[in-house]
Length: 377
Image (cartoon, rainbow, N blue to C red; front, side, top):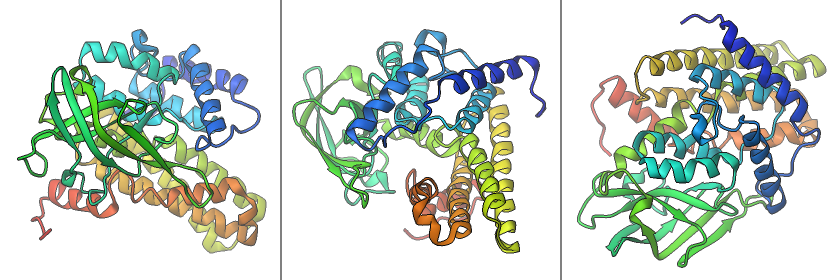
């Protein structure tokens, strides 16, 4: 593709850069894994939405700017370079929304997307279960038909943002006779509905970045089923491919981190070995940027995200770990006093796990991209 941005895209970039420079909070918001910080981030989402910067690639009718995918990538680069707050709404706008655009109804999009864009409803993931972590097809939570909808029962765990979120989305087994990928249905549900119990999972820092969700015959109307009942696995692959392949971890996040790493190296100095690692991080971030430009080109020409998103996910998750480990090594004992790098490193360690572990991604690459025979499972 042509890597020179045209005048329209450059003007879009400059407009975004100016708005962010004028509006990004001068002081960091509290962690969105606290009740106070969650509401601060919700208010930030509303401010973004008021200026139509919350979901720039969405149609205007849902709060977006009808921006192209390339413009979205450019906006993400400017967003992270500005030091803007993390997106507490990311589960919704980067994972559920693409699923609704691909598989949802007009009624669902009209009802769900505007509030999602403003942060009025923050969404949690409800995928993993005890004994069904990366192997989501082994899930046992059930959906039973009832008048006008379904009754959901079961347990979800490691549910991101669930401690303070409003709603959740995930798969349930709607055909009790089915096995593995068949007989699953994709639901949205309210975390405050009767029969829902949310139990925060506190991390070492005391903050509940995750939660368990227990459901006891929770009523969900037919209007909150995405796609056809029983065909939820296909719908879920849209969510998973977006999590791994394009939207959840845009290149802007790693480009900004690599630039910060270069600044740190200039500040504290280091050995030739650490200098090489800093350069490797910069190269990795730029390679991801170029790969994403290629993905944007393919999607613009009518292609789809597919199993190649697993290659992408393996790259950025390990890039994140290596980049932050280099920063900690540069800082030495002072690393414990630099919460920005230490917190980033702790979070990076989750990258090779969430969205499908490295082992799952490598199986996908081997079988679906390289055509290697399936191993014994």
